[in-house]
Image (cartoon, rainbow, N blue to C red; front, side, top):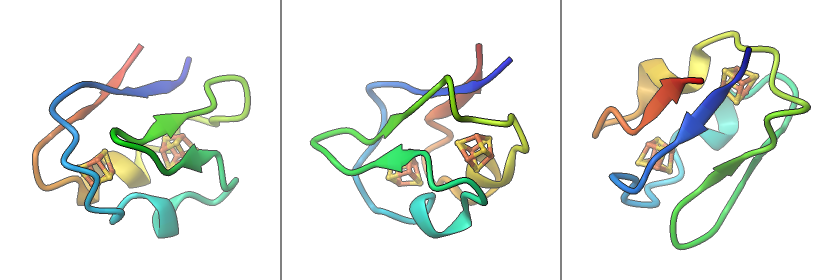
Length: 55
Ligand code: SF4
Ligand code: SF4
């Protein structure tokens, strides 16, 4: 299990600092390395546009 960021991302950057395993990369939309993600849910809680979903 992992989380994925969808096209609703507004690149605010809030999720990056929340990730305990540093697996979120910046970009036009941010990207989660799904192999590294431990599915903790911390990023999802801070996303202002609810762009992070379980996959
Ligand atoms: S669910 Fe947790 S480990 Fe996965 S990207 Fe979000 S903050 Fe990082
Ligand atoms: S918190 Fe949400 S909107 Fe902000 S960069 Fe992360 S995924 Fe994108």
